[in-house]
Image 1 (tube, rainbow, N blue to C red):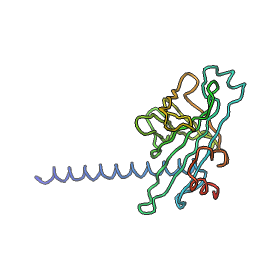
Image 2 (cartoon, one colour):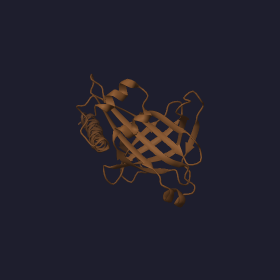
Image 3 (cartoon, rainbow, N blue to C red):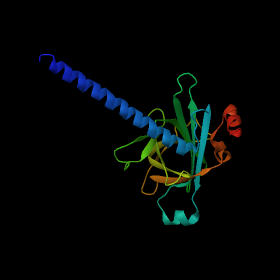
Length: 205
């Protein structure tokens, strides 16, 4: 009888490990499904993949949303498979035009694995952040694979011809918190890329 508490403890540990493994497996499955929808393809065997989403708001939309600062937004998401451990790294580039400010602005950073957050109503979301406390965005799939929702609290952006400036914060105000962007050909996102090798890689997709 004296060994029973140890047996119970061992069983509890095994159950906890199994639950943790099951949770990780479920998380990996959901992330895989989200990634497949985001890139509209199974990218597990591709070295690098891209997905482009854009939206240019027309005059009627802006008239109905007078507090919206953004007049156009472009999102380029890339994913690269590590050849050694087969892990998937994700990054993003965001382009922004304003209705009352001239010039093109952009930002970039890395994205996490997709997961279900407590306030997402059960939907998988991918968080993308900018280094040095530059804020970021949350990317969520739309009702179809042809669109994404970009959720914004605050993100640091820079005028693309002055990358060494301090930049400015784009904060999600009354009409700038959620943006629906539509899937588009990669050439519509090439303006966000300055590296020649990456531009060449995008042309082959």
